[in-house]
Length: 242
Ligand code: GLP
Image (cartoon, rainbow, N blue to C red; front, top):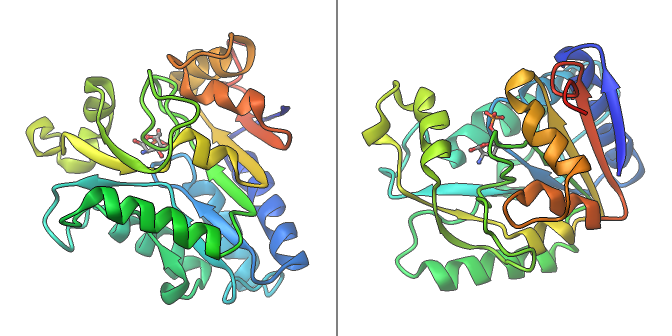
């Protein structure tokens, strides 16, 4: 694992954007692994700035998001489909027709998850996967106890994750879905490069467990230790327990 400690969140976003831009400049039709949450927002902002300056063109790139809630009203602004459209597709100039989010509303979720994996394979696999880290060590929505071999599937959200994400639902915990679909750890590990960004003291313990702790299903992020091209970009606060 390559660990890069930077002075602040803005520098983390800049460094991640530079790496993604380098991949797309080499391969304009690159497949990007997109992620939600607050962690990647600085990366999207910095990358959008590069697009605006004409340094990189993402219009031919493809995108696959990591995860989605199950049980939200169609078109809900809290859905990750809406979040990815707002935070990534629009500012980055991605083609909406080339970006997919896991199915949260399919009648047959199992079949829809298998179809999502098939679509990722047919696209040639993910070239660079952007990741955040949950305070409990989750990546995507792979909560503690997720198998390192897991594939895209439905999961139950951990109480801690629902509490952490209640801020996106007007602080109403009851409004946060109980279930989600997420790419599995096995799916994520197949990306050619992994780029995990973490900022702030609240992530410091999870960051230390991911990097310095043993491989453990209780810390899903520790799966990155198995990947040959994983980079972790941290601000000083997130790196403070290393
Ligand atoms: C969310 C998402 C993850 C994200 C993580 C951290 O629940 N499913 O993909 O990386 O939790 O979120 P944040 O970046 O807002 O701290």
